Length: 457
Ligand SMILES: Cc1cc2nc3c(=O)[nH]c(=O)nc-3n(C[C@H](O)[C@H](O)[C@H](O)COP(=O)(O)OP(=O)(O)OC[C@H]3O[C@@H](n4cnc5c(N)ncnc54)[C@H](O)[C@@H]3O)c2cc1C
Image (cartoon, rainbow, N blue to C red; front, side):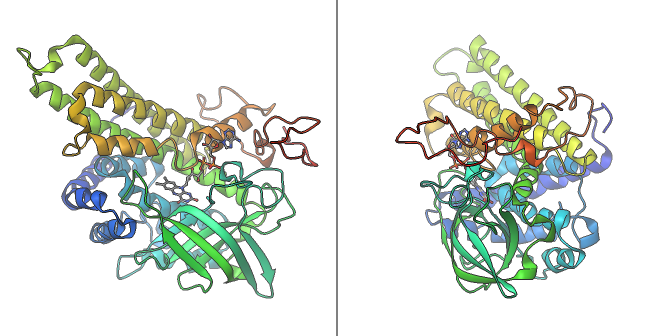
């Protein structure tokens, strides 16, 4: 993309086909699925649309053509994603997680692992193939998903352990929140990548790796989580109870580098989450504008003629435009720099999701109390928008820490993004802010200072 925001005819066609899919296939199932109280039943209501997405090449559009994927660039991916997210971001999240589960195999897997895990995903005759991505763990102390790169050993940070025993790894512990992992029947996705502690005696920048678990692995069970937004995508708790996984399922290049996998994955998903927020805010804005043009609230003409209503909607529209172009820029950066964008991906995700949550709420204020009536779509849009700053690596911990870690490096070039220069991301930039407020004499609420300094920068 040169500095020209005109889409090519191929990009327009892609956008149009994603829009048609979203409106004709997805939209009819959204309302009932969202109202479904059982989270597994809600997900199952999307199955027909998912299979249609699979057959249309959407479900694995992010994988390279070499392995049967759609070979979309990151810019193309987010053009399509905006259209789906404008209708339902939960459904889009299911597809996003297929990418989070398999892109690391493409980045770091051996040729044999790429064939073994990528090919089946793109050649499933049933069209139901699902992939999970499991990092997050249950709340509770010590815990600490947001501090996965902590310098402290297990159980701080990532607690699920994988112990080598002969030609298998034996997994123990619990994950909480991962998408897709439970599959269509609550018994397992076709495959899931799981970040585990392969060396519990080491901190998060040395002791983590990623291993693929396949459906039917004994010792793995799932429980679906009911949540307030993104109800069409399935989040689950996973319990590993001496689950035995072939040792050659450990993705080669991730050995001791699970931390870098997490950061690169969330760099890739930064503009996807950002554009999801754009899609939802766009729906809220269009609906609020429509309301304002037709509702008079007892006055002589529709409320759009009140100056304040017009100003607010103008601000919202500007915010949506600005965020959309930041997402395009970020996706373009990932395309140009080998899917690395640890800094800009985090900035994009933080900025768009927070600015657009505020914009969606402004749309509700324009509409007024009627926006709270569940007969209208605004309450769903607010629930969906509330998810964005919290999921896909929370903005407060994981995302802002990544920005801080890069900026605190003495080599950081503040003009790198402007000049489209590669921004290195190294282990020396991790661990930052993971251990708050050291004191020589620890307060009762503080653990003892770890042997290593909390940051390497
Ligand atoms: C729809 C949806 C889909 C998801 N999909 C997946 C998935 O596919 N796979 C997966 O593994 N997870 C998934 N998650 C979980 C998600 O990625 C979370 O971002 C992740 O679990 C981290 O949560 P957290 O940031 O709240 O971390 P926590 O560790 O629970 O931290 C909680 C809070 O503590 C504070 N905090 C903690 N540490 C720091 C710090 N160092 N500095 C400042 N503040 C700090 C922050 O306020 C932070 O928000 C999903 C969640 C949702 C809702």
